[in-house]
Length: 224
Image 1: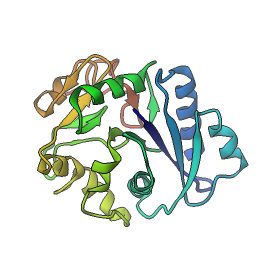
Image 2: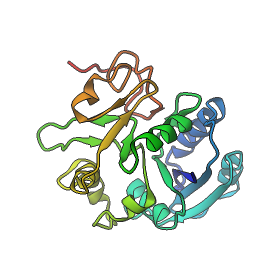
Image 3: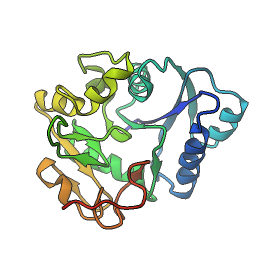
């Protein structure tokens, strides 16, 4: 199975994103994926400078793609997926990092078990105007499924509707008759169980999360 890992690097001077990128790379080196893959770094806002190239070249089979930055991370995902030849594509936002050795092997194993679907490491069951969704800082699917999403996200105001608004990507998956799986180091969970996943987002010390981001850092806020 051909796997592509996509990481979004906002290549905008003075924005502090370089420290996020350093954390992502450090976490990758500390937590080997344990399965072969290619890596695409989408440099939003301009081609990579020598510092960025030096940071990311330790990742396997790395390719740099200059992203439009039209809708930040979401437009970068779409631009990377449109050119992907992978069977499974994993998307990481700028603040994401990996937390477990074998994180990619776990992702690939879930994909092989459940087939075409949306997969994510953190979920939100929805409330009020927030639709149930898998958070888009660390999720995976097939390029074919992702490319079929009916809207091109080209404006920052479209980002949140894509993630958790009406006809968000998780809702779109449902219209295809497919499922959205929350995957932790210890289990596979459908919507009704998302909030109960032991060691997941807002549970305990979140010890079973495969990935983290700026919203999964201490202090921990627990589900009621």
